[in-house]
Structure formats: C-alpha cells, structure tokens
Amino acid sequence: MITKTVFAVILVGVLFSLARAQQNTQLKTEQAKTDQLSPETVRLIDSVDGPALYKAYCAVCHGNDARGDGPMAMSLKVPPSDLSRIAARNGGVFPQARVERVIAGEEQLPGGHGTRAMPVWGPIFSQIAWDQDLGRMRLRNLAVYVGRLQTH
Image 1 (cartoon, rainbow, N blue to C red):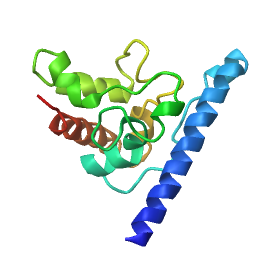
Image 2 (cartoon, rainbow, N blue to C red):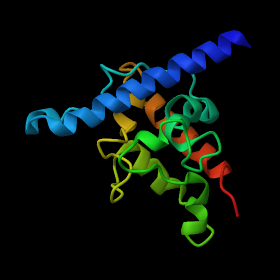
Image 3 (cartoon, rainbow, N blue to C red):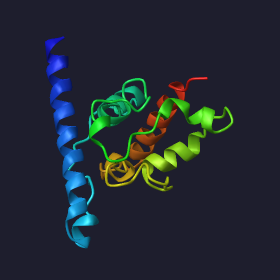
Image 4 (cartoon, rainbow, N blue to C red):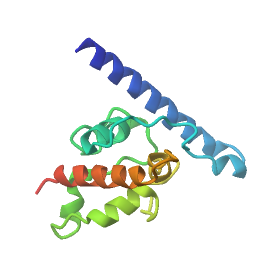
C-alpha cells in the first residue's frame, strides 16, 4: 500500500513537472513553441490496459472520475474537460473513433486536447519501434475506458 502511494506521489510530481515545463515553452521563441512531449521525453508504462493508461496519463488533470478535477486542474491555463460527459454532449452516444483520434492528435478540439497544456498521446503511445500496433491498442483501450466512465 505504501509503495503504491509513493509511486502515485512520484507520478503526480513528474506529470506536474512535465505540464509546467510545457506551459513555460509558451514564453519562448517560435522554435521552442513547437517542442512538445515526445517519445524521447516521456516513459511509457508497461501496461496497455485502459484503466492503467488513464491513471498514468490522464487522471492527474481529468481526475479519477474523469470530471476534470484532477490535482493539476487548478494550475492549468485551460481547465481539463469533463470526460464523463462526452456522450451527453453528443446526443447520448459515445463517439469512440473520434475520441481515439483526439487522443492521438489526429483531430483537434478548440482549446482542448493538444494545446500546450495538454499533450497529444498518439506519438508517445506508439514509441515502441518493434510494434507500432501497440500504440493503436493503447489509444483504443484508453478510449474504451473513457467510454465506460460516461455518466447519463
């Protein structure tokens, strides 16, 4: 139990540092603005399980229940979205494929995922050169998990 707590605290600290570093790049030159989290700067967790991916990469900002109230939420310039209401905002239907594209950075949301405050996870999830399909599996599993977090 203590090991899990220590790991969680370390993970939150690392993610907080990464988010702060990203925010600071806004103040630098145009070249610095193009620098984002990359496969070289972020370590993947070993799991491809949706809940584990969410906990490792999303919960710090979006919160454990996906309502946008994670421990980093207050320090971000753009508040994290309430991911538990995606289906409600889309006529009661969870847009699985679109959510995957947004997480991957293939589809932009105005003021949301992919801004300086929010990393695009597609390139990071696909950083294992010997099996690029794992990146797609991570994206799918994460999106499926977000779909299970939907409230009605």
